[in-house]
Amino acid sequence: MRRIFVFLSFLFLISCSSQETFKKTPVDQFIVDMSDVNNFTILLHDMDAEEHMFTADEYRHQYKIITLGADSVPQTKTTEWYPVSEAFFNLHSGDIGMEIASKVDGKVSKQVSPPGYSGYVGNSKYGQWKTNPSTGTSFWEFYGRYAMFRSIFGMGYYGPIYRSSYYDYRRHYSSGRNYYGGSSGSPRYGTYSSGVTKSNPSFSRRMSTSSSFKSTVNNSVSRSPARSAAGSRSSGYKSSSSRYGSGSSSRSRSSSSGGK
Image 1 (cartoon, one colour):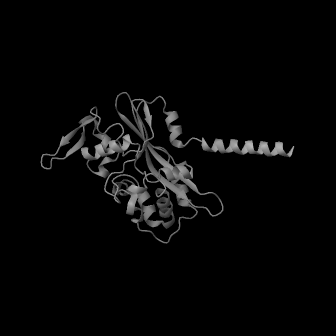
Image 2 (image 1 turned 60 degrees about the horizontal axis):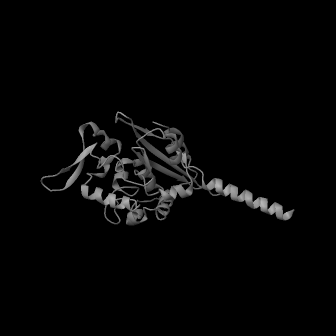
Image 3 (image 1 turned 180 degrees about the vertical axis):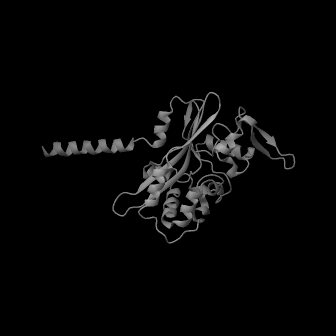
Protein backbone atom coordinates (compact mmCIF):
# COMPACT_ATOMS: atom_id res chain seq x y z
CA MET A 1 0.00 0.00 0.00
CA ARG A 2 2.84 2.37 0.88
CA ARG A 3 4.48 1.74 -2.49
CA ILE A 4 1.22 2.48 -4.29
CA PHE A 5 0.82 5.73 -2.35
CA VAL A 6 4.38 6.81 -3.20
CA PHE A 7 3.83 5.92 -6.87
CA LEU A 8 0.58 7.90 -7.05
CA SER A 9 2.23 10.87 -5.34
CA PHE A 10 5.01 10.71 -7.92
CA LEU A 11 2.49 10.73 -10.77
CA PHE A 12 0.71 13.71 -9.20
CA LEU A 13 3.95 15.70 -8.97
CA ILE A 14 4.80 14.91 -12.59
CA SER A 15 1.31 16.02 -13.65
CA CYS A 16 1.61 19.33 -11.78
CA SER A 17 5.08 19.95 -13.20
CA SER A 18 3.83 19.23 -16.71
CA GLN A 19 0.90 21.63 -16.32
CA GLU A 20 3.27 24.34 -15.12
CA THR A 21 5.67 23.73 -18.00
CA PHE A 22 3.01 24.08 -20.67
CA LYS A 23 1.19 27.06 -19.16
CA LYS A 24 0.57 29.62 -21.90
CA THR A 25 2.32 32.96 -21.75
CA PRO A 26 0.27 36.10 -22.50
CA VAL A 27 1.99 36.21 -25.91
CA ASP A 28 0.93 32.64 -26.67
CA GLN A 29 -2.64 33.54 -25.75
CA PHE A 30 -2.57 36.63 -27.97
CA ILE A 31 -1.45 34.47 -30.89
CA VAL A 32 -4.34 32.09 -30.29
CA ASP A 33 -6.85 34.93 -29.90
CA MET A 34 -5.66 36.51 -33.17
CA SER A 35 -5.67 33.29 -35.19
CA ASP A 36 -7.95 34.93 -37.75
CA VAL A 37 -5.65 37.96 -38.15
CA ASN A 38 -3.21 37.60 -41.02
CA ASN A 39 -0.71 40.30 -39.96
CA PHE A 40 0.15 41.45 -36.46
CA THR A 41 3.12 42.51 -34.35
CA ILE A 42 3.50 42.19 -30.58
CA LEU A 43 5.98 44.59 -28.99
CA LEU A 44 7.19 44.36 -25.39
CA HIS A 45 6.08 47.82 -24.28
CA ASP A 46 7.12 47.68 -20.61
CA MET A 47 8.06 45.36 -17.76
CA ASP A 48 7.88 45.55 -14.00
CA ALA A 49 8.87 43.46 -10.98
CA GLU A 50 8.21 43.32 -7.24
CA GLU A 51 10.36 41.64 -4.62
CA HIS A 52 8.69 40.04 -1.60
CA MET A 53 10.39 38.79 1.50
CA PHE A 54 8.06 35.91 2.38
CA THR A 55 6.21 35.19 -0.87
CA ALA A 56 7.19 34.62 -4.47
CA ASP A 57 8.45 37.62 -6.44
CA GLU A 58 6.06 39.03 -9.03
CA TYR A 59 6.84 39.80 -12.66
CA ARG A 60 4.69 41.65 -15.19
CA HIS A 61 4.68 42.63 -18.85
CA GLN A 62 2.77 45.20 -20.83
CA TYR A 63 2.50 44.86 -24.60
CA LYS A 64 1.73 46.95 -27.64
CA ILE A 65 -0.17 45.05 -30.33
CA ILE A 66 -0.29 46.29 -33.92
CA THR A 67 -2.68 44.60 -36.34
CA LEU A 68 -3.04 45.20 -40.05
CA GLY A 69 -6.40 44.68 -41.76
CA ALA A 70 -7.18 43.95 -45.37
CA ASP A 71 -7.23 47.69 -46.04
CA SER A 72 -3.62 47.96 -44.78
CA VAL A 73 -4.71 50.41 -42.08
CA PRO A 74 -2.87 49.59 -38.82
CA GLN A 75 -4.69 49.38 -35.49
CA THR A 76 -2.74 49.69 -32.24
CA LYS A 77 -3.52 48.72 -28.66
CA THR A 78 -1.48 49.00 -25.47
CA THR A 79 -2.55 46.18 -23.18
CA GLU A 80 -3.06 46.03 -19.45
CA TRP A 81 -0.32 44.54 -17.27
CA TYR A 82 -0.05 40.74 -17.38
CA PRO A 83 1.68 38.50 -14.83
CA VAL A 84 4.47 36.40 -16.34
CA SER A 85 6.80 33.74 -15.00
CA GLU A 86 10.31 34.58 -13.87
CA ALA A 87 11.68 32.51 -16.76
CA PHE A 88 9.67 34.46 -19.35
CA PHE A 89 10.64 37.75 -17.69
CA ASN A 90 14.32 36.77 -17.87
CA LEU A 91 14.02 35.62 -21.48
CA HIS A 92 12.76 39.02 -22.66
CA SER A 93 14.35 41.32 -20.09
CA GLY A 94 16.55 42.88 -22.77
CA ASP A 95 13.72 43.37 -25.25
CA ILE A 96 11.84 46.53 -24.24
CA GLY A 97 10.49 48.13 -27.44
CA MET A 98 11.30 45.04 -29.51
CA GLU A 99 9.03 42.68 -31.44
CA ILE A 100 8.74 39.47 -29.46
CA ALA A 101 6.19 37.86 -31.77
CA SER A 102 4.77 38.60 -35.20
CA LYS A 103 2.60 37.18 -37.92
CA VAL A 104 3.38 38.12 -41.51
CA ASP A 105 1.04 36.96 -44.26
CA GLY A 106 -0.23 34.17 -42.02
CA LYS A 107 3.17 32.95 -40.79
CA VAL A 108 3.82 33.25 -37.03
CA SER A 109 7.31 33.90 -35.65
CA LYS A 110 8.62 34.39 -32.11
CA GLN A 111 12.01 35.60 -33.28
CA VAL A 112 12.87 38.82 -31.43
CA SER A 113 13.39 41.69 -33.89
CA PRO A 114 13.72 45.48 -33.86
CA PRO A 115 10.32 47.20 -34.14
CA GLY A 116 8.81 46.91 -37.62
CA TYR A 117 11.64 44.84 -39.07
CA SER A 118 9.83 41.51 -39.46
CA GLY A 119 7.13 42.59 -41.89
CA TYR A 120 7.50 46.21 -42.96
CA VAL A 121 11.12 47.37 -43.26
CA GLY A 122 12.60 46.01 -46.48
CA ASN A 123 9.15 45.12 -47.83
CA SER A 124 8.68 46.84 -51.20
CA LYS A 125 4.93 46.91 -50.61
CA TYR A 126 5.39 49.55 -47.90
CA GLY A 127 8.50 51.50 -48.86
CA GLN A 128 11.85 51.60 -50.61
CA TRP A 129 15.57 52.06 -50.07
CA LYS A 130 16.80 55.55 -50.89
CA THR A 131 20.34 56.84 -51.16
CA ASN A 132 21.62 59.99 -49.52
CA PRO A 133 23.51 61.74 -52.37
CA SER A 134 25.92 63.50 -50.01
CA THR A 135 26.97 60.42 -48.04
CA GLY A 136 26.12 57.56 -50.39
CA THR A 137 24.41 55.66 -47.58
CA SER A 138 21.16 53.84 -48.26
CA PHE A 139 18.25 54.17 -45.83
CA TRP A 140 14.66 52.95 -45.60
CA GLU A 141 11.75 55.26 -46.40
CA PHE A 142 8.08 54.33 -46.17
CA TYR A 143 5.73 55.38 -48.96
CA GLY A 144 3.52 58.34 -48.08
CA ARG A 145 0.42 56.29 -47.29
CA TYR A 146 2.45 54.12 -44.89
CA ALA A 147 4.44 56.92 -43.27
CA MET A 148 2.51 56.37 -40.04
CA PHE A 149 4.37 53.06 -39.53
CA ARG A 150 7.44 55.01 -38.47
CA SER A 151 5.47 56.62 -35.65
CA ILE A 152 3.45 53.53 -34.71
CA PHE A 153 6.59 51.42 -34.26
CA GLY A 154 8.48 54.25 -32.58
CA MET A 155 11.21 54.11 -35.21
CA GLY A 156 11.95 57.80 -34.85
CA TYR A 157 13.48 57.14 -31.42
CA TYR A 158 16.16 54.93 -32.96
CA GLY A 159 17.24 57.05 -35.92
CA PRO A 160 17.39 56.15 -39.64
CA ILE A 161 17.27 52.52 -40.72
CA TYR A 162 20.28 51.94 -42.93
CA ARG A 163 20.37 49.15 -45.47
CA SER A 164 23.67 47.83 -44.05
CA SER A 165 22.05 47.49 -40.60
CA TYR A 166 19.00 45.79 -42.07
CA TYR A 167 21.18 43.24 -43.90
CA ASP A 168 23.03 42.64 -40.63
CA TYR A 169 19.66 41.99 -39.00
CA ARG A 170 18.74 39.52 -41.75
CA ARG A 171 22.00 37.61 -41.15
CA HIS A 172 21.19 37.39 -37.44
CA TYR A 173 17.59 36.38 -38.17
CA SER A 174 18.55 33.59 -40.57
CA SER A 175 20.79 32.06 -37.89
CA GLY A 176 18.18 32.42 -35.13
CA ARG A 177 20.02 35.18 -33.26
CA ASN A 178 18.41 38.33 -31.88
CA TYR A 179 19.62 41.58 -33.40
CA TYR A 180 20.11 44.67 -31.22
CA GLY A 181 22.35 46.68 -33.53
CA GLY A 182 25.01 49.17 -32.52
CA SER A 183 28.55 48.51 -31.39
CA SER A 184 29.46 46.29 -28.46
CA GLY A 185 28.26 47.82 -25.21
CA SER A 186 25.96 50.29 -26.96
CA PRO A 187 22.94 48.48 -28.45
CA ARG A 188 20.74 50.46 -30.79
CA TYR A 189 17.58 48.56 -29.85
CA GLY A 190 16.22 46.93 -26.73
CA THR A 191 16.21 47.66 -23.01
CA TYR A 192 19.58 49.46 -22.85
CA SER A 193 19.19 51.53 -26.00
CA SER A 194 18.94 55.31 -25.98
CA GLY A 195 15.71 54.93 -27.97
CA VAL A 196 13.99 53.24 -25.03
CA THR A 197 15.20 56.00 -22.72
CA LYS A 198 13.28 58.45 -24.94
CA SER A 199 10.25 56.33 -25.80
CA ASN A 200 9.60 54.90 -22.32
CA PRO A 201 10.53 57.50 -19.69
CA SER A 202 8.55 55.65 -17.01
CA PHE A 203 10.72 52.53 -17.36
CA SER A 204 13.89 54.61 -17.56
CA ARG A 205 12.92 56.49 -14.42
CA ARG A 206 12.43 53.23 -12.50
CA MET A 207 15.83 52.03 -13.71
CA SER A 208 17.42 55.28 -12.57
CA THR A 209 15.76 55.66 -9.17
CA SER A 210 15.29 52.11 -7.92
CA SER A 211 18.45 50.15 -7.21
CA SER A 212 16.44 46.98 -6.57
CA PHE A 213 14.50 47.14 -9.84
CA LYS A 214 17.67 47.98 -11.75
CA SER A 215 19.43 45.02 -10.19
CA THR A 216 16.53 42.71 -11.09
CA VAL A 217 16.62 43.83 -14.73
CA ASN A 218 20.42 43.70 -15.00
CA ASN A 219 20.56 40.20 -13.50
CA SER A 220 17.79 39.06 -15.84
CA VAL A 221 19.46 40.53 -18.91
CA SER A 222 22.69 38.75 -17.98
CA ARG A 223 20.80 35.46 -18.44
CA SER A 224 18.93 36.53 -21.59
CA PRO A 225 19.81 36.44 -25.31
CA ALA A 226 20.52 40.18 -25.04
CA ARG A 227 23.47 39.76 -22.66
CA SER A 228 26.20 40.30 -25.28
CA ALA A 229 24.48 43.35 -26.75
CA ALA A 230 23.89 44.93 -23.33
CA GLY A 231 27.60 45.09 -22.54
CA SER A 232 28.58 47.89 -20.21
CA ARG A 233 25.20 49.58 -20.57
CA SER A 234 23.83 47.30 -17.85
CA SER A 235 25.59 49.51 -15.31
CA GLY A 236 24.91 52.76 -17.10
CA TYR A 237 21.81 53.80 -15.18
CA LYS A 238 22.26 55.86 -12.03
CA SER A 239 20.81 54.15 -8.99
CA SER A 240 19.73 55.41 -5.60
CA SER A 241 19.53 53.74 -2.22
CA SER A 242 15.73 53.53 -2.44
CA ARG A 243 14.42 49.99 -2.42
CA TYR A 244 11.84 48.64 -4.78
CA GLY A 245 9.84 47.29 -1.89
CA SER A 246 6.16 46.45 -1.54
CA GLY A 247 5.40 47.69 -5.04
CA SER A 248 2.25 49.64 -4.21
CA SER A 249 3.07 52.18 -6.91
CA SER A 250 3.54 49.34 -9.37
CA ARG A 251 0.12 47.95 -8.52
CA SER A 252 -1.50 51.29 -9.13
CA ARG A 253 0.22 51.49 -12.51
CA SER A 254 -1.00 48.06 -13.44
CA SER A 255 -4.59 48.77 -12.52
CA SER A 256 -4.72 52.17 -14.17
CA SER A 257 -2.96 51.33 -17.45
CA GLY A 258 -5.70 49.23 -19.01
CA GLY A 259 -6.13 48.79 -22.73
CA LYS A 260 -5.98 51.74 -25.04
